[in-house]
Length: 281
Image: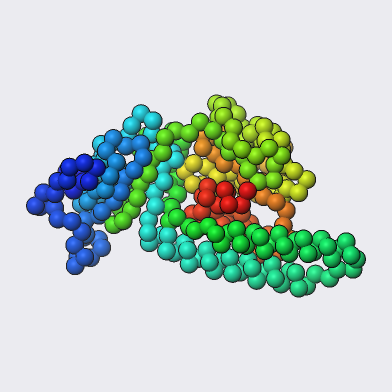
């Protein structure tokens, strides 16, 4: 499929039999203009035949470099970003309403309770504000195995972007831990090992909501299999290069938060990724 390609990494070539995207054709029949970046031999923008796949785009870009980390490939799509943004804004409005309802129904009987409720309300407002600063990226999570030799056979859409990063050598630990930061990856280490390197969760941590954002965009939560470290799913979970471990702060528990498991849902469904981690930490 990589034959007859208009490319723009260097010299431009566009054979007469393959014209750029023609808006008069149906989306299914149009050539696909895609951008391939990162650890490929010839990064750039390419116009590919209508039935091209992710693999065709990588071939057009000359294939992967020795430093490529295929597991961490970021595949973004504009139509997905628009949908994510709409749903994300709706979810934030719902979260804001639930926080407001919870604050209205709570009754403070003592000065200490009133102070605690005020602090909780302030924390909720700060959380909402920080989340509003983040924008969904349109990333589609490619359910790759860390050792996968190639990308899935997914058809391209016009405007798609493929970014193949270099293999990372660290694991990040952020949020309510004593010494958040990035730690050198070591083969055989678990997520629990990296949490210990960061000093473990603080007293104000929401221990039951700890999650891991993997380099491929997927999320692994301590809640998914029930329990918490010591018997939960993260205790012995093998770390992968590029993992980001996040320990949220304890916030007022509304029914929406409990049922939707807001941290993992926001990250997984709306494609926020590491940008959200950096904003919330």
